[in-house]
Length: 379
Ligand code: SF4
Image 1 (tube, rainbow, N blue to C red):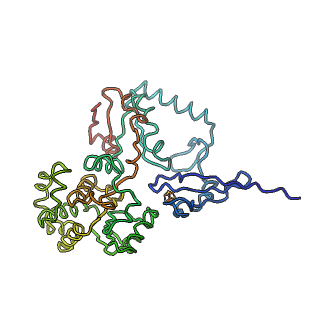
Image 2 (spheres, rainbow, N blue to C red):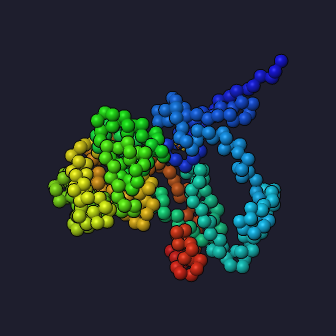
Image 3 (cartoon, protein in one colour):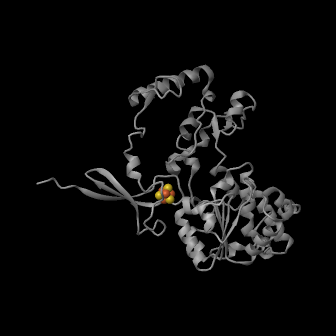
């Protein structure tokens, strides 16, 4: 009689660095992963995984996966490696690092890294405490989420804003620099439901993404000019008396400075920069202010350009100006993690950084290595 196959099912979360954090079902036969699927009982996942994950079992067993330490044996780029043991790898690294520290000091070592698929705990800051204790050069990683999060926290504060499911109550939804259908699929379900219930969906994106094609209005600024569009929106809201003054007076700070800053940022000024007709910018501001509840989904593309953090600050001011936060389904959403307080200090241990440690922004690493830019030493 043939042996019976042992089938089991396990529940887990998607291991990718992705805000959807899908609930996954892992199907296992005789100890081998044979398939994955989205958990249909989960209200956000709704039984679907995105294209990055729906054949995860194939990647899990892919022969090209790196599973062991390898030592390069030929010139760089020649793809010549030999497998070594973990003990050999650790010995080799620690011997080399100790020699570097002895000769040049711990500042000569810098952890140049960013985010992978490891999630919040390991992804960005997993090694920080180790390197801080060592006295290595500190790496600033400001070009992506850190720039966006700093901008949001400075402007709105430590809140996730509108929770993704509350977009169902929105009547005017602005998806600003996010291709939701491809990369934030599970939020799109809610947006689509709201759209079917009569909400107007505006997508701001430099190209006609799938999401832009499904929108009621696609606004396409030139790449990296979103900040100018947002400033012209602010200008128009103020100029056309569309500001919720009661909300601004009671719940915000800095309005006079913002109004002063926006004074010259007319739609005509923005048209020159963004390529969007001034009349469209005015129409957008009027509709946004007069169709409550209005919600903005801030996508990650917004921060990935020069001045991206300031663009996010400008966009983040819009809901306060029209009092959108008063309404369920009104406001903005940047990063849902702020609803789950996360103690970066406990993981990164900045208190271990010795005084005088240099800091390098990894965008500037090339310039630092060529001597074009001097090292900062704020610690
Ligand atoms: S959308 Fe894709 S990458 Fe994101 S959590 Fe779900 S399965 Fe993972």
